[in-house]
Length: 104
Image 1: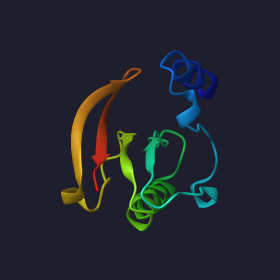
Image 2: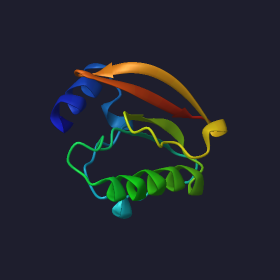
Image 3: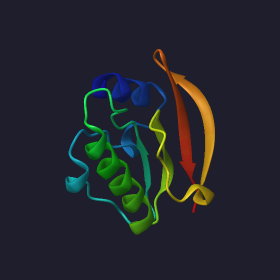
Image 4: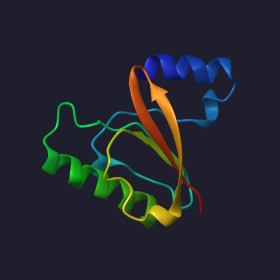
């Protein structure tokens, strides 16, 4: 999926402005005030306790680094600070998802 995303960015002439990566959230290095779009696991392969920690840490990352961007998910317990996010319903493959958009 990373290669497909990189090709799409190249075709849109924005490849030099976007970094695509797959890594544990704990290893993510963010620029204060930067942008992040995440498509984390939906819980099909992780235990519920792991999901709670993952999504709490993800939201904390957005808040700590004052990030804008969004999260594509089916996870019902995201976000905790709902007033900071707007929601749009969408499909990701065959999954009904939400795109939670975080503004400044």
